Length: 268
Image (cartoon, rainbow, N blue to C red):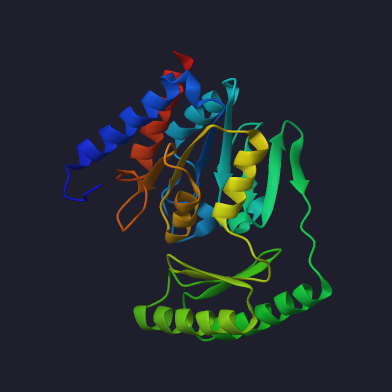
């Protein structure tokens, strides 16, 4: 879809397309798979400040309550952090760390699928943490996050030169010690396991027997989800940038409005 189209046309097209899926009984079981940051929650300089837009809470609750509809958040965040920030209803599936972690939200908390590292992977994760800390050392605005299976170098708050240098060093470190490297918006994530959002989404789809998937995301890492889906699925890019998605919306507010249209159609 061309970026030259009027903004309101882009957003209205996406809302109408999601509504059509909602009225199509042959599309069920339906899986709605959404990124979090930049898709349901506006991007923040401080990642801990991210929250779903208030208008998005009700559509997600209604989706989970609809028979033959499943909701999943598929994020690069560590699973415990995603659960803490996302405010999703019981019944939601959570996929964290770009597919390396998975859980099901229940009324009593999280039912987790355990992640187990070999001794060699655990040693590499420790080495990655030490080396990544050196990448951030002396560079204001560059910081390191450690996940159960990966190390992430963040540079959103850094000056341009520092961010570019940190990215280059992190990518080189990933080539040396990583099993997988994800180069996203102001982040480089180096994993000791092979995992991707696309693989995780395909596995969840197969497990649930979903006939159609509605999938939305904003980052380059979400392109792996779009590429993993089928021609009959509905993919939505949130924000600017090249994409393989069929539709585009301008921002999380427009995405939340499209999800409300889907929930309305499902209830009707």
